[in-house]
Length: 197
Image (cartoon, rainbow, N blue to C red; front, side, top):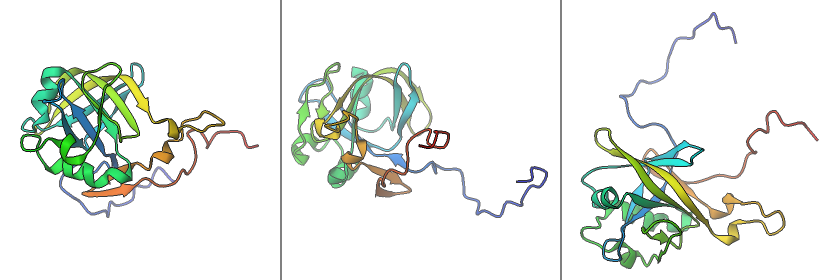
């Protein structure tokens, strides 16, 4: 590529918006007692730091889960397999003010290792999170959190190599208003510089 030549931008211009796609679909569980337990489906979620392991979720203050998470300063991120797509969508469009989502969906709350918020048993991977900071951003507030425990289904591990095979979880992603199955493995990190066998 010749760096002295700048091509004319002929791409279609859109108004500023969240076009960072795809993003993970997660069900966030919260609450310190059975009566308070709730599930919130979130797409604004991501990684921010490796050491210590930290992540974030962004939640609208008017959502039912918002004051629960703000009060307890903890939540659990539950990854969503394709088998839970409909339940995850339902939990995202129905309010915990009107529905007990664990009862309505037949999902199973499970005690975590480090937090009082329940894990969702049917989710293959559960990240227990402790809120470190709440950052008001506009339509959403960001809950910046440290991941204090990780729980993974045993069947995601290869019996011979003991390696975690996350593709077995059949996770879904969200992109521009639609849900997608994650595709097959293309290669692993660092393959472009790895010595050929």
